[in-house]
Length: 281
Image (cartoon, rainbow, N blue to C red; front, side):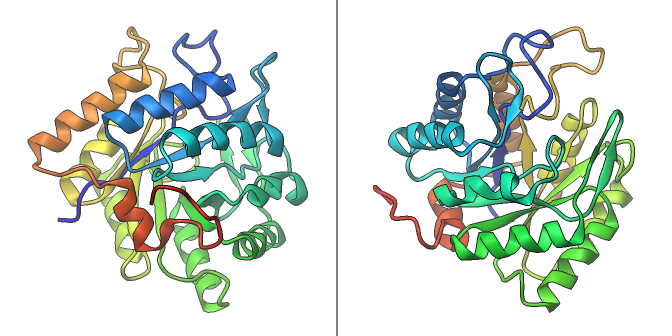
Protein backbone atom coordinates (compact mmCIF):
# COMPACT_ATOMS: atom_id res chain seq x y z
CA UNK A 1 0.00 0.00 0.00
CA UNK A 2 1.10 3.53 -0.73
CA UNK A 3 1.79 5.76 2.27
CA UNK A 4 -1.29 7.54 3.62
CA UNK A 5 -2.08 10.98 2.20
CA UNK A 6 -3.67 13.23 4.83
CA UNK A 7 -5.44 16.18 3.25
CA UNK A 8 -6.14 18.64 6.06
CA UNK A 9 -9.25 20.86 5.75
CA UNK A 10 -9.14 23.22 8.74
CA UNK A 11 -11.80 25.82 7.99
CA UNK A 12 -14.19 25.57 5.05
CA UNK A 13 -16.88 28.11 4.17
CA UNK A 14 -19.69 27.21 6.56
CA UNK A 15 -18.61 26.56 10.19
CA UNK A 16 -18.20 29.64 12.40
CA UNK A 17 -17.09 30.23 15.97
CA UNK A 18 -20.72 30.14 17.08
CA UNK A 19 -20.96 26.58 15.74
CA UNK A 20 -17.66 25.42 17.21
CA UNK A 21 -15.20 27.72 19.00
CA UNK A 22 -12.27 25.70 17.63
CA UNK A 23 -12.89 26.75 14.01
CA UNK A 24 -9.97 28.91 12.81
CA UNK A 25 -11.16 31.95 10.87
CA UNK A 26 -8.50 34.66 11.07
CA UNK A 27 -5.35 34.52 8.97
CA UNK A 28 -3.20 33.96 12.06
CA UNK A 29 -5.47 31.22 13.40
CA UNK A 30 -5.46 29.38 10.09
CA UNK A 31 -1.68 29.62 9.73
CA UNK A 32 -1.12 28.45 13.31
CA UNK A 33 -3.53 25.50 12.99
CA UNK A 34 -1.97 24.35 9.72
CA UNK A 35 1.54 24.73 11.12
CA UNK A 36 0.58 22.65 14.16
CA UNK A 37 -0.99 20.03 11.89
CA UNK A 38 2.13 19.93 9.75
CA UNK A 39 4.26 19.30 12.82
CA UNK A 40 1.88 16.51 13.83
CA UNK A 41 1.92 14.99 10.35
CA UNK A 42 -0.11 15.90 7.26
CA UNK A 43 0.63 15.69 3.55
CA UNK A 44 -1.35 18.58 2.10
CA UNK A 45 -3.78 21.31 3.08
CA UNK A 46 -7.03 22.51 1.51
CA UNK A 47 -7.43 26.20 2.37
CA UNK A 48 -10.38 28.53 2.60
CA UNK A 49 -10.10 32.22 3.51
CA UNK A 50 -12.46 34.24 5.69
CA UNK A 51 -13.24 37.88 6.33
CA UNK A 52 -11.91 38.45 9.83
CA UNK A 53 -14.72 40.75 10.98
CA UNK A 54 -17.72 38.74 9.76
CA UNK A 55 -16.16 35.25 9.38
CA UNK A 56 -17.78 35.16 5.91
CA UNK A 57 -15.92 33.22 3.21
CA UNK A 58 -13.89 35.31 0.81
CA UNK A 59 -12.26 34.70 -2.57
CA UNK A 60 -9.97 37.74 -2.19
CA UNK A 61 -6.41 37.20 -3.31
CA UNK A 62 -4.98 39.50 -0.65
CA UNK A 63 -6.44 37.40 2.19
CA UNK A 64 -5.27 34.13 0.66
CA UNK A 65 -1.91 35.77 0.05
CA UNK A 66 -1.37 36.39 3.76
CA UNK A 67 -2.24 32.78 4.56
CA UNK A 68 0.07 31.37 1.90
CA UNK A 69 2.86 33.73 2.92
CA UNK A 70 2.70 32.49 6.51
CA UNK A 71 2.60 28.84 5.52
CA UNK A 72 5.39 29.16 2.99
CA UNK A 73 7.52 30.63 5.75
CA UNK A 74 6.74 28.01 8.41
CA UNK A 75 6.30 24.81 6.34
CA UNK A 76 7.49 25.44 2.77
CA UNK A 77 7.43 21.78 1.74
CA UNK A 78 3.70 21.38 2.51
CA UNK A 79 1.52 20.82 -0.58
CA UNK A 80 -0.86 23.79 -0.45
CA UNK A 81 -4.26 23.85 -2.10
CA UNK A 82 -6.80 26.67 -2.24
CA UNK A 83 -10.55 26.63 -2.71
CA UNK A 84 -12.09 27.81 -5.97
CA UNK A 85 -15.60 27.12 -4.69
CA UNK A 86 -18.77 28.25 -6.41
CA UNK A 87 -20.92 28.22 -3.31
CA UNK A 88 -20.80 31.98 -2.72
CA UNK A 89 -19.87 33.36 -6.15
CA UNK A 90 -20.45 32.19 -9.70
CA UNK A 91 -17.87 34.57 -11.16
CA UNK A 92 -14.97 32.69 -12.74
CA UNK A 93 -12.85 35.82 -12.40
CA UNK A 94 -13.44 36.01 -8.65
CA UNK A 95 -13.06 32.28 -8.07
CA UNK A 96 -9.78 32.12 -9.96
CA UNK A 97 -7.91 35.22 -8.81
CA UNK A 98 -6.13 33.28 -6.03
CA UNK A 99 -4.44 31.17 -8.72
CA UNK A 100 -2.21 34.14 -9.48
CA UNK A 101 -0.48 33.45 -6.13
CA UNK A 102 0.72 30.12 -7.58
CA UNK A 103 -0.51 27.65 -4.95
CA UNK A 104 0.19 24.00 -5.64
CA UNK A 105 -3.46 22.97 -6.08
CA UNK A 106 -6.82 24.58 -6.76
CA UNK A 107 -10.07 22.77 -6.01
CA UNK A 108 -12.17 21.83 -9.02
CA UNK A 109 -15.67 20.52 -8.39
CA UNK A 110 -16.57 18.65 -11.55
CA UNK A 111 -20.26 19.59 -11.85
CA UNK A 112 -22.98 21.62 -10.19
CA UNK A 113 -24.54 20.11 -7.07
CA UNK A 114 -26.96 20.80 -4.25
CA UNK A 115 -26.10 20.94 -0.58
CA UNK A 116 -28.93 20.77 2.00
CA UNK A 117 -29.62 24.52 1.88
CA UNK A 118 -27.47 25.81 -0.97
CA UNK A 119 -26.34 25.07 -4.50
CA UNK A 120 -22.79 25.06 -5.83
CA UNK A 121 -22.93 26.12 -9.47
CA UNK A 122 -20.17 24.80 -11.69
CA UNK A 123 -21.18 25.31 -15.31
CA UNK A 124 -19.11 23.60 -18.00
CA UNK A 125 -17.65 26.91 -19.20
CA UNK A 126 -16.68 27.77 -15.62
CA UNK A 127 -14.92 24.45 -15.09
CA UNK A 128 -13.02 24.79 -18.35
CA UNK A 129 -12.11 28.41 -17.56
CA UNK A 130 -10.75 27.44 -14.15
CA UNK A 131 -8.72 24.58 -15.62
CA UNK A 132 -7.20 26.79 -18.28
CA UNK A 133 -6.14 29.39 -15.72
CA UNK A 134 -4.70 26.67 -13.48
CA UNK A 135 -2.66 25.39 -16.39
CA UNK A 136 -1.43 28.92 -17.08
CA UNK A 137 -0.18 29.41 -13.51
CA UNK A 138 1.26 25.92 -12.95
CA UNK A 139 -1.50 24.84 -10.53
CA UNK A 140 -2.74 21.23 -10.40
CA UNK A 141 -6.49 20.63 -9.99
CA UNK A 142 -7.67 19.11 -6.72
CA UNK A 143 -10.49 17.16 -8.36
CA UNK A 144 -13.62 16.99 -6.20
CA UNK A 145 -16.12 14.19 -6.76
CA UNK A 146 -19.55 14.11 -5.10
CA UNK A 147 -21.19 11.64 -7.51
CA UNK A 148 -20.22 9.18 -10.23
CA UNK A 149 -20.96 11.61 -13.05
CA UNK A 150 -18.17 13.86 -11.85
CA UNK A 151 -15.63 11.09 -12.41
CA UNK A 152 -16.91 10.76 -15.97
CA UNK A 153 -16.59 14.51 -16.49
CA UNK A 154 -12.96 14.37 -15.37
CA UNK A 155 -12.33 11.74 -18.05
CA UNK A 156 -14.00 14.02 -20.59
CA UNK A 157 -11.57 16.83 -19.63
CA UNK A 158 -8.68 14.37 -19.97
CA UNK A 159 -9.84 13.42 -23.47
CA UNK A 160 -9.91 17.13 -24.32
CA UNK A 161 -6.29 17.41 -23.06
CA UNK A 162 -7.32 19.96 -20.44
CA UNK A 163 -6.41 17.71 -17.51
CA UNK A 164 -3.05 15.95 -17.50
CA UNK A 165 -1.50 13.41 -15.13
CA UNK A 166 -0.78 13.12 -12.29
CA UNK A 167 -4.34 13.22 -10.93
CA UNK A 168 -5.54 13.69 -7.36
CA UNK A 169 -9.22 13.16 -6.44
CA UNK A 170 -11.22 13.90 -3.29
CA UNK A 171 -14.20 11.55 -3.11
CA UNK A 172 -16.74 13.17 -0.78
CA UNK A 173 -19.35 10.95 0.88
CA UNK A 174 -22.48 11.85 2.80
CA UNK A 175 -23.84 14.89 0.95
CA UNK A 176 -27.60 14.64 0.57
CA UNK A 177 -27.39 14.86 -3.25
CA UNK A 178 -24.41 12.60 -3.87
CA UNK A 179 -22.42 9.52 -2.93
CA UNK A 180 -23.29 8.10 0.48
CA UNK A 181 -21.22 6.38 3.15
CA UNK A 182 -21.50 3.01 1.48
CA UNK A 183 -18.76 0.57 0.58
CA UNK A 184 -20.15 0.10 -2.94
CA UNK A 185 -20.59 3.84 -3.57
CA UNK A 186 -16.94 4.44 -2.70
CA UNK A 187 -15.73 1.30 -4.44
CA UNK A 188 -17.36 2.04 -7.77
CA UNK A 189 -16.10 5.63 -7.71
CA UNK A 190 -12.55 4.37 -7.12
CA UNK A 191 -12.94 1.76 -9.86
CA UNK A 192 -13.86 4.44 -12.38
CA UNK A 193 -10.98 6.82 -11.63
CA UNK A 194 -8.35 7.32 -14.34
CA UNK A 195 -5.57 4.76 -14.04
CA UNK A 196 -2.85 5.76 -11.61
CA UNK A 197 -4.92 8.40 -9.82
CA UNK A 198 -4.26 9.22 -6.20
CA UNK A 199 -7.42 9.61 -4.13
CA UNK A 200 -8.67 10.46 -0.68
CA UNK A 201 -12.10 9.97 0.87
CA UNK A 202 -13.82 12.57 2.99
CA UNK A 203 -17.17 12.51 4.72
CA UNK A 204 -19.63 15.26 5.56
CA UNK A 205 -20.75 15.43 9.18
CA UNK A 206 -21.39 11.99 10.69
CA UNK A 207 -19.94 10.38 7.56
CA UNK A 208 -16.42 11.69 8.16
CA UNK A 209 -15.08 8.97 10.46
CA UNK A 210 -16.59 6.16 8.40
CA UNK A 211 -15.29 7.59 5.12
CA UNK A 212 -11.81 8.06 6.57
CA UNK A 213 -11.83 4.55 8.05
CA UNK A 214 -12.84 2.96 4.74
CA UNK A 215 -10.17 4.89 2.88
CA UNK A 216 -7.41 3.88 5.26
CA UNK A 217 -8.42 0.22 5.05
CA UNK A 218 -8.71 0.35 1.24
CA UNK A 219 -5.32 1.93 0.62
CA UNK A 220 -6.46 5.47 -0.16
CA UNK A 221 -5.89 8.80 1.52
CA UNK A 222 -8.11 10.82 3.83
CA UNK A 223 -9.57 14.28 3.78
CA UNK A 224 -10.21 15.43 7.34
CA UNK A 225 -10.87 18.60 9.32
CA UNK A 226 -13.48 20.99 10.67
CA UNK A 227 -14.53 22.04 7.17
CA UNK A 228 -16.51 18.81 6.81
CA UNK A 229 -17.37 17.91 10.40
CA UNK A 230 -17.45 20.00 13.59
CA UNK A 231 -18.26 17.19 16.05
CA UNK A 232 -15.99 14.46 17.37
CA UNK A 233 -18.86 12.04 18.09
CA UNK A 234 -21.91 10.95 16.11
CA UNK A 235 -24.20 12.06 18.93
CA UNK A 236 -22.95 15.64 18.36
CA UNK A 237 -22.22 16.20 22.03
CA UNK A 238 -18.48 16.87 21.79
CA UNK A 239 -17.24 19.71 19.56
CA UNK A 240 -14.19 18.54 17.64
CA UNK A 241 -10.89 20.32 17.26
CA UNK A 242 -8.69 19.90 14.23
CA UNK A 243 -6.00 18.41 16.43
CA UNK A 244 -8.40 15.80 17.86
CA UNK A 245 -9.53 14.79 14.37
CA UNK A 246 -5.94 14.47 13.14
CA UNK A 247 -4.81 12.49 16.18
CA UNK A 248 -7.64 10.01 15.55
CA UNK A 249 -6.47 9.58 11.95
CA UNK A 250 -2.94 8.92 13.17
CA UNK A 251 -4.29 6.26 15.56
CA UNK A 252 -6.21 4.57 12.74
CA UNK A 253 -3.17 4.74 10.48
CA UNK A 254 -1.05 3.04 13.14
CA UNK A 255 -3.63 0.28 13.59
CA UNK A 256 -3.62 -0.37 9.83
CA UNK A 257 0.17 0.00 9.62
CA UNK A 258 -0.13 2.87 7.17
CA UNK A 259 2.80 5.28 7.23
CA UNK A 260 1.90 8.96 6.72
CA UNK A 261 3.09 10.27 3.37
CA UNK A 262 5.50 13.18 3.66
CA UNK A 263 4.46 16.37 1.89
CA UNK A 264 7.70 16.40 -0.06
CA UNK A 265 6.97 12.92 -1.46
CA UNK A 266 3.62 14.02 -2.86
CA UNK A 267 5.01 17.32 -4.05
CA UNK A 268 7.91 15.73 -5.89
CA UNK A 269 5.50 13.28 -7.54
CA UNK A 270 4.16 16.17 -9.60
CA UNK A 271 1.94 18.06 -7.15
CA UNK A 272 4.17 21.02 -6.41
CA UNK A 273 3.42 24.10 -8.49
CA UNK A 274 5.48 23.81 -11.65
CA UNK A 275 6.23 27.53 -11.73
CA UNK A 276 6.53 28.65 -8.09
CA UNK A 277 10.11 28.83 -6.78
CA UNK A 278 9.82 27.38 -3.29
CA UNK A 279 12.54 27.45 -0.67
CA UNK A 280 13.74 24.47 1.32
CA UNK A 281 12.45 21.74 -1.03
